[in-house]
Image (tube, rainbow, N blue to C red; front, side, top):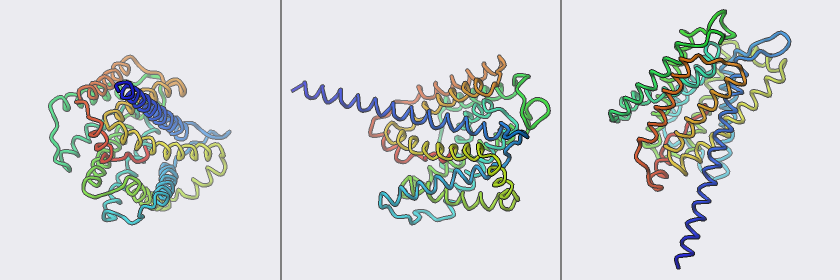
Length: 343
């Protein structure tokens, strides 16, 4: 009688292993690819005249309309209602903060390199803790504050001591650190609010993942379209992509991998919990930095290497210091965890 039980255990482990491989490969492939296209669009010139693409809200609109269409299709295919579960203004709050998050992210690439931006994103635990205390009334432990301080210290070292030859295409000398850091601070603040308020929506309403994604991205489509029309950027953006077919292809691929990544993020959180997801995302950020340095020739100073080791050491330590979750707990946490909107 023991043999069938042992065989069933081996089969379950093999199944779980392949699910984990599927999750890791999916997240790493889509989000690392997303990072490459994001940097290419915002920092690499197009055409013989070396023109730069400058329309961040156009990228936001393309990403959101793709995700909105796919989430609507998922709701219809699963025969779920398209009606909003929460008041529409609450979806709009998430949408507005998410648009500001993504716009700050794209704009920052004009003034800081992708490795600097990616490492700065690791500091998002700080604003999440601040917003969590204010909105969710959460209480954090002492080592959470210590690790947050180490992450902030490492990010500060990485940003303040760039290699002398790492030049931004939008400035005449070194990267415009002050403006770039200001945009990244804006990104971290808005991103922290977005994820915390998403968590509040999931816990306050009986809300399906695709329902929240559909309404928040639909609001984002309307707001971003209105924004770049008011800025007078609609026709220039269309003219740019019509003259540079390779830019149009890059934007199409960026929107596609951003949308696909939503599936892998949701799948990973539901099957393995938020801790495993956070560890995979930390590894993805490290891989993205290394790939960007190699592909786009970003040199790193020795101070930046110290900063990077400090940040990733603290993030991995945070993962190992968390108590292990039971499978049922991971599933429950995954179901109620806020689903990250497009990066």
